[in-house]
Image (cartoon, rainbow, N blue to C red; front, side, top):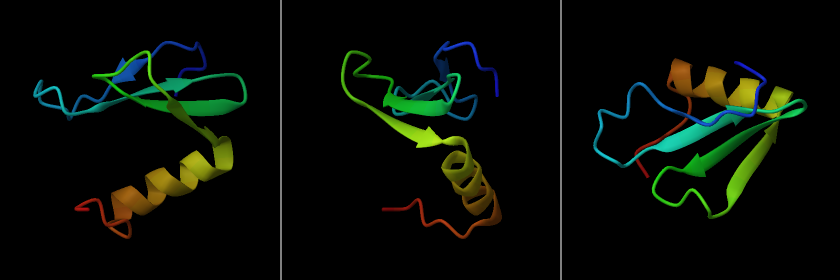
Length: 65
């Protein structure tokens, strides 16, 4: 992940507008709602973000809720 602070929309969003944006910062990863760019953002440590990505890719994270 780039560590440039630039927000990027998921390539899997399909252009439906129901997606999140992710940005890599010096020591954290930020996630925000693409429809509310001025709203709050979640931040993850590098290790927490890595664990989230691994769990999601392996199907251990239930994203249907």
